[in-house]
Structures are given as structure tokens and as C-alpha cells.
Image 1 (cartoon, rainbow, N blue to C red):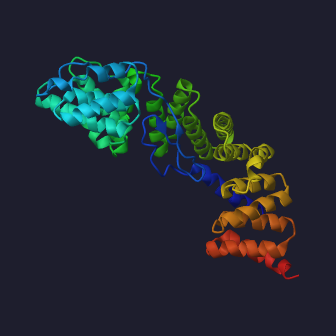
Image 2 (image 1 turned 180 degrees about the vertical axis):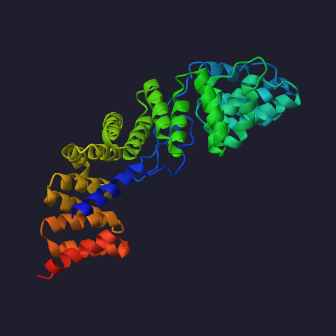
Image 3 (image 1 turned 90 degrees about the vertical axis):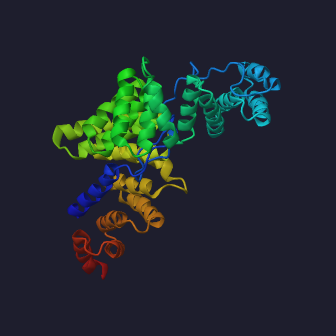
Length: 404
């Protein structure tokens, strides 16, 4: 039975060791924690600085052959008054009447940008830039705003050429924000080596560029370089202590590094995972955070605390199977077998094809001398994993007692 329990705990630990299986949220100001069995959906991450807007709109004579009635002065005044919807409406009407009016398209795009209508902004700013280039009057502010709009609209392929031109402007020091945007665009288009260079450049230009620090940590995690991941993510959480996604990935990183170590080093990593998980749970008090913290507590053999963390969520009808499984593990370790069985039976109802649940449930039935139920659980596990030697041994061990 002891060997069975060891195998169960090892299976539970694999939840924390699971790698990232999906990309981050594509919005630059929203990053997504690792998608594991416990991984939450994206939550808000580092916000970019909007105090120094890139948008520089001037009520100048439109580029191209525009009639006098295409004057954008009033629309610009609305823009200055932060009446962006009205400014966009008026500028679009002017552009519709005179499609060659670059200033109208530009003003419409800038207004839409501030309305967070990034796809529309990108379309209108692209029209403005095309007209400017045709007239050989390209405006850097339009290029900047268009690049940012493409990134925020998640149109990374279109953003990349503009970002490269912005960063490589002669005599100009690259803005860390645009270095980050380029890294994100490269990351999202599969150019991971280039993305890492861009994120590093962004951090060199601004050591507190939280988003770049986070992505460098994520990339290190994905290649299983947990030392580097921990270093980057500690910097990210120092830069922005409210970044829940960084705390989540930092907890996973400590758990993975600790699982590969032994002795005091492993114990230290598990305690660090607890601290990171506690911060995560304060920032994002939900079931996913509780389950991750519970894994760290279980690894540190703080089973009673793990159960306490999980219990509030286990009472809900929509509790996840993983939460119930971890609760069953915690109660098993404190020898509270009745509560462990209740949690694991619910977990099996929610996830009937998880062999680890039946392995643990069979063990709890067996130590509770419910041999008939133990045999049923072990045999159900064998249906899912026919060649599992431990399940075979466990089933044969309880079979004689189940018949009495």
C-alpha cells in the first residue's frame, strides 16, 4: 500500500510539472499563464505607459487633392477635447467624402485608437500612411500609431515591418515599448529566437519593463531552464508585484525545480513555491490559485494547510476535478480517509477517465477495509491502464478480502 501511495503522490506532482501547452494572450497588455491542468485563463498584466501618447494630430492641410470643405479643424478640436467618438465620426465623414484626405483618415484612426477600437484604427491609419507615402510626406507619428494599433489588434504580421522601421530609425534610440512590441510580434509569429533578443533589448533599455521580463521568464520555462525562469520572473514580480500571471508561473517554476532536486535544495524551492503561491492567492483568489498553492503545500508536506486552502472551493457544485483530487491527497496524508474518499468519489464522477483518481481512491478504500470498493476502484484503474504493475498488484492484494 505504501508503494501505491508513493505512486499516487508522484502522479499528483506531475500536474505541477506539466509544460506550457498554449500561447499567451495575444494582447500586449494581457499575458496568459501557463495552460496546464491547473492553468488559469488570461488575466490583466503589465499596462503600458499611456501618459505620453504617440498620437500627434494637427489640423493641417490634407495630403492630396482635397477640397477646402475637407478641413479637419473642427474634428481636431473635438479630439483635443477628448471627444473621441465625435471626432472619429466627423473625420470619417470627411474621409468618405474625400478618400484622398490623409489628415482625415489619420484623425479618424487616432480617435479610434483612444476609443480602443484598434482594428478600425489600424485600417484608417493604414489608409492615411498610404496617402502620405504617395505624397512623399510620411509622418512618423502615423507610423508609430499604426504599428501600435496592429499589435493591439493582434495583427502581428502587419505590425512587424513597421516596428522594425521604427526601431531602426537613424539617429534615434529605440523606445523600450516598441522593443517589447516587436518581441511580442515575433513571439506570436513563431520567431522565438528573435523575440528573445527583442525582449532582452527592451529590458536593457528599461530594466523594469515588466512585460518583457515576464516573457523572458515564460520562454525560459518552456525550454525547462527553471533557474533562468525563476530569475526573470522574480525580476518581473519585483517590477510589478501585482502581476498575478508572473506569480503563477514563478510558483510552477519553483515546483518544477524542486521536483528535480532533493534534500535541502528541494525543500527550499517548495517553500519558495508556497510564498509565491500565497501571493498569487491574494492577488487572484480563485480555485486555480488555490489548487496551485495546495500543490506547493503538499510538496512541502503541509497537508493540513493544503486541505484548508482547498475546502472552500470543494463545497461548490462546480468544483473542478483537480481540486477534489488534491483535496483527497491532502486528506489521505492526514489519515482522514472518510473525507478523502468523499473528495475522490466526486473527482471520479467529474473525471471518470483519470487513472490516478482510482489509484488513490482504491488505496483509501483499502486502508479503510472497504475491500470490495477498493477492488472495484483498482479494477477501474486497470481498465484505463491495463499494464500498470502497481494497480495489478493492488487488485490482487485485495481480491481475497473482497470476496469475504
